[in-house]
Length: 417
Image (cartoon, rainbow, N blue to C red):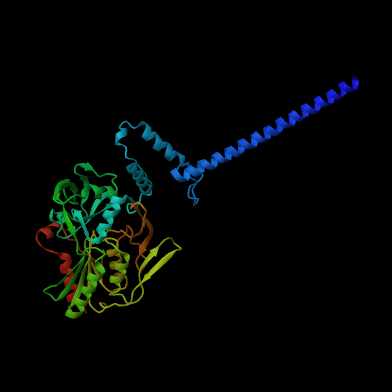
């Protein structure tokens, strides 16, 4: 009996030990299973995040440690859940608005996000045809400003001038407005009207100017052999058609052999870099046309293309407050190489480089990546090109059909030694 009781105690102890081991093993299994499930859950969140964009890890290391991108989605969900007029919520517009705000935070008026509609309008601009008032606008000293009214277009016919400040569009104040939003408000179908509240330097108070929109078709180069046997080349902007039209103008110059050339870049808001280099190269045979500065250490020189078919013709370039970007590059290059005299007023000072990145949905972002320097090393951005002779063209001259800048250019060519 004693032996039986002894064996029974041993068997009981073994059973208890087995149960403890089983329980421990089960606990380990459950713990491992929970961890596996937790890891699987995490992987599922990340996987779903790659689909929905939520909780997505930055693949390029762009987010700093103090940025929690979940906040974006928290705000997104809060707006959708609580906004009073839920029926008016447009997720696509919210999304594009968020991208626009992100890019606008850089506080660079030339770095902008363009939704598909605006991107298409931008492409149309470069092709030379759109509907609107026909004026280039920009931000100058934080104020929406007319850079260049295009000759013969509705803005020009209504009396807008380079340098006019736009205080309101259809009674909507423009303080803090971005260029793309302003363009959207000013443009519209032909035969519709827009009212711009304009302040002009020297005027006593702002005035409302009503402009009827039209189809804006621009041929970017116009030429004339004037009565003094001087060949006048006016470049309105540097667009898709400019290179071929300018080539035609060069052939005209060579066939007619004028006394000199007046290159009129007044109110030219700019355009393509490559076209500006090609045009400057018709005067500059060798050397730097413009330098692209990414940083103090990283610069890229753009050299003349070597034709210089116009190098022996006395040349004067006309510029004003509306001459910007590519027109400043041409004027600065010919001034630095002493190939032309610059007459007029200090240029706009838009000397930064934008690159255009297009996306699959048709949207794009235009972003500043560098600044332009003249061959002498002067930064064009904000500083502009300083004329060799500063001569203004005021409203009284315009009303009297006088052009003192053109008159002085003619004198210089006639007195050329």
